[in-house]
Image (spheres, rainbow over the protein chains, first blue to last red):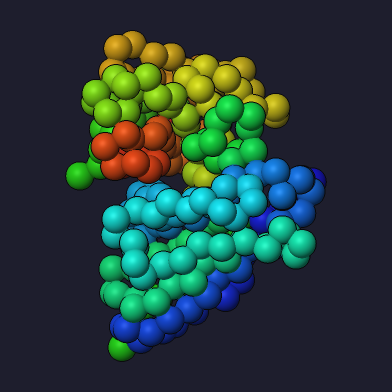
Length: 121
Length: 111
């Protein structure tokens, strides 16, 4: 059974930092591109970032570029999102998602349960 | 304002058929990028429903189907059931934004 389990969320002040983790199991993590998607309270889904299977290529939404860093440790089967200079508008549930369907790098076949990040003073 | 446009809400009685549209532009659907659909039940993570316009992952009932027409796509749900009440999102890749884009979501109410 595929499982993606996020951790590391919580309350942080504006300008602060937080690191999210996503532990993967049940599939070949080292072969899958991975993404982060967020959802502000009561709002829709917004793509945040993606990383290729070996961690050498990353892409970011303009809204987080220069502040967030996506990375992965294939030996630990874990995806990360380092979030710096956090703003009120970064408040959201953050989901990690796998893109494991061949030839569909931007399709999210499995999602984590989500982790709430609240940016507030 | 989402890059992909969906109706905010649709509704139908049990057993009926409903469709949800997703309209894009020349930098996503019109550029040939695939559309995918997700179902988000209240309080849960999204779940992949349809990928590549028409493909259903294993375990998704054939009551759910997808189609494409020009720069639009549609999700159809037949034999509506109470458990289908959820938010539905379309998603694609956008070459101008160089990233994934979602529709604003459509809330399905089963009457």
